[in-house]
Image 1 (tube, rainbow, N blue to C red):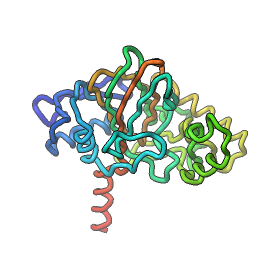
Image 2: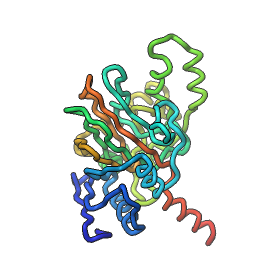
Image 3: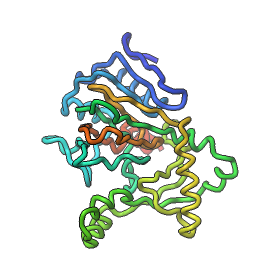
Length: 291
């Protein structure tokens, strides 16, 4: 698959991940190239670009070519002048809270389609990110477990973000206000991807809190089983960041984990979240016109 003579797509593992070379993301891309990048994302779930010299404006332009950008993040800081670009800057004085398996913002009714992350300043060692393939996690389940999960829904809420409103001070009112502001969402435990048509697991330890229709004990037991199952290395890829590296992942069918093994050193990343997949939205609109 190649849209230009110099574009190359190299799988990192047979399960998930591919590196793309031959594209300069600081420049506007031809539609053919954007379509190739999109198809690589669908095929490999997370794609990587090395050595990109991309400004915040160029980062945002690239993201906008795939869909509608998310509103400013409810917790994290943003890049000055670019409210839709999250600045993830961490060191010993500001340790990260992304060092756990999660799918971004599943406490929203419409969680994002994709995220695009670029390395701005890296520690001398450590700071890798892992992604996991939720197609593979679902496919590897026993058949009776797949049948058991059909039709079950789960409650997702702000989860780990509770710490941002309670650590350091006992302030129940502040926490309750945040819980009301962010609310919760209900999603199927097993979803079907709108493009590939494949089924995937949709629970994560960061935000999934309860399986509807089960007691608290039953829910904890089954969720614990699923979350342990998701953690198998066979479903994962580990990416070692380098200067100017960029990653784009399909947030619908993956989870990720930012390893915090670089503290007390400093690590700074910029992330843009794309809410709606422009191609699937356009397809749905076309279907509604013809029916």
